[in-house]
Image (cartoon, rainbow, N blue to C red; front, top):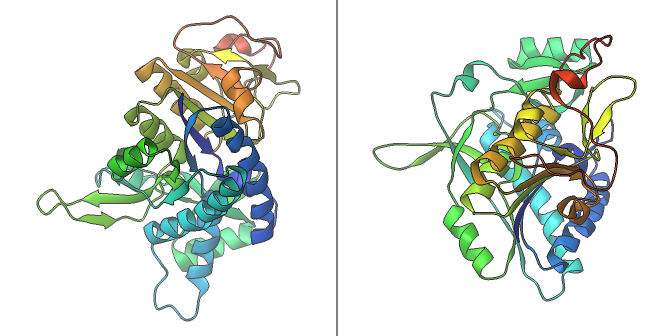
Length: 331
């Protein structure tokens, strides 16, 4: 099978952790073990990853660097995170896959310059802020901040991906048996001049899950995996006893009340891939990528209902997944 596996940025640097290199190396070490199992099982694998915590850290450093006359733009910072996370993953995977070539490719993603997302920033980046820090950043740096659960974080525009610039290169690398790391952080966001064809970076961050779905579809992948720090998608999210879903259709996923800043874009991505291709899509734990493919863990998404696989009992989804006496949780 050809598999696109997308790692959440928070899976490599979890909420509340110090953003030290050693912390991220530890998580990459664990992720590489899980990803290597896919390759050793005979699958052709393309890996992509999030970068929300990492690009936020670099942006904050750039904003306060006294040596700079202006901070680095987000597109350049996104490329930096691709290099940083890509090299950590490539080194770990190379050590676990003797005889195989692993390559991290800086990847650009075309977006529409007129995408309404530029007027409505909603993509969280960076670490949590206190109320005072958020107000100061808004006044002094022109940031937009919003609540991510109980925390305040910076939000930036997140236009929809339209095309993967390096798609031919990724195809060629796969044909040569290379394990490819590409489109990290959703890809470096660029717009193309219609007359000259030149690319120009834009101040935005492309959603990693949307780009992963587009990449998987354009690569004719047999499966899209979104690997994160939870084992399943949960119905009744936020309730005292949330219910894990083992199977779902795209329609059922879309009816769930899921957090906009975390699980909702993942659910939308796998739903879109399943609908457009009819192939396997799944959301599962970062430490068991192979189990997510095999259906022994995670939430499997298909265009038609399938029999429940071994694991937690499948629960009804959509509005019926919420007890009538139980208030629906806020997304």
